[in-house]
Length: 249
Image (tube, rainbow, N blue to C red; front, side, top):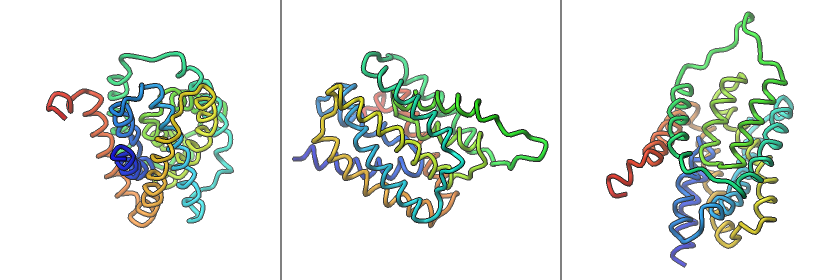
């Protein structure tokens, strides 16, 4: 019972962080692993919560008129295809060094995200759709394979490839993760790696966190999202570089 209550509370925090920024899975996965679940099953179980959290976020952003999917269908399809391949790969392979690589990626993303967003001038060409498709195919593959930090990567990519501010980019990010996670959950569930009891308890917390996160994003604006995003990335980097272990946390 203590474990289930803990997972529920962690889910609320993770849902809030994931909706505003990303990196909530970096908090959830260690808790699941400490509970005695192997890393692959923890990765798979977390996807149930991710799916329901992003369904909630998508619904809330759409209700407030922030989300418009017409212009992002092609990159969403690309992310879905990539995630299917990534999820299938996750069942069979793992990497011992991805934490350090991911931390470096986070730092680069933080630098890119904090740069002032510039509108494209008439002299700047928009990326062709085929190139956008390839970019989001790769991002989707990473999301299906690992998931941790994909929110940061999607936000940075959307901010650079498309003309989205952080509020709209967040809404699109939530929709895209929801779309591809449907297929990831099916793949992981079919492989027998999902522990549904833990996944559904986490999901209940994530839904509440997502509800709060969307409201905070809309009412407090882009500056607040940047603050949360910066804090989330810095904490994730400290964890991935092993700093918390060095100080006994």
